[in-house]
Image (cartoon, rainbow, N blue to C red; front, side, top):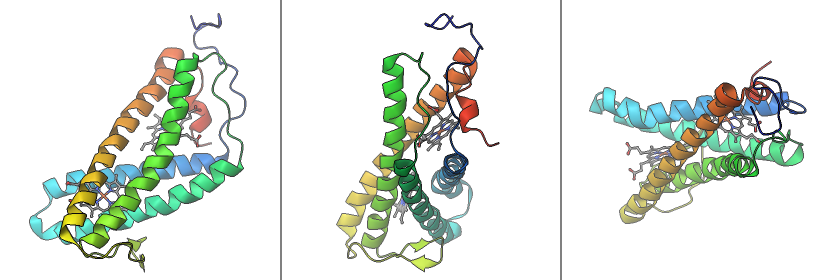
Length: 188
Ligand code: HEM
Ligand code: HEM
């Protein structure tokens, strides 16, 4: 039984769901991040070497789209109230969930910026949505490119850790606490 004496499966005091725009941003970013992980890690392993240039073009286009969407999402997040965590959630879990949410914002803005800098240093020009060339942040330089590329890859690993933590939290709410937290982020 949850700490407040509530019967398992009974809805906790959850207040309002996330607004429709926040929900749309959430699932759009999930789709873009899954696409980006497939492009960065799966396609190079299954496609022939001759596809490398188009895989890179897709990586830069999808990544810069994530940057744009995350900046719009941050603007929305800071200017609209979000529903509070369930009142019966232990303080440590509430802090962990909040920390993970804000870490997503930081990582999903920092990661594309590092990628943009690495791409410039390798001599490439990323195109927003695959169309609009982005301004050059750094001059081409192989050593700088490899260093920033390394930090970019390490930050991508941090993103994977956050995803595992976050999805474990979502499953904990859905399967163990059964408190309706998932419902407030689902479409409709
Ligand atoms: C959320 C967005 C992004 C994710 C999850 C991501 C993920 C990754 C991963 C996992 C790798 C390593 C691939 C491998 O070694 O096989 C990589 C490499 C790279 N990414 Fe991204 N990336 C993102 C955004 C971007 C953006 C926006 C750009 C450029 C505009 C970019 C440019 C690069 C470059 C140039 C490399 C090669 C780095 C090197 O080998 O030194 N990435 N990315
Ligand atoms: C790439 C994967 C994901 C990312 C980057 C992500 C990111 C986020 C962020 C940033 C928030 C906080 C929203 C805000 O306050 O602005 C959030 C909330 C939430 N996410 Fe995700 N998410 C991902 C995948 C998932 C998946 C797969 C599920 C479901 C299984 C999920 C379920 C939820 C739920 C239920 C909330 C609301 C939590 C609450 O009310 O405290 N997320 N997510």
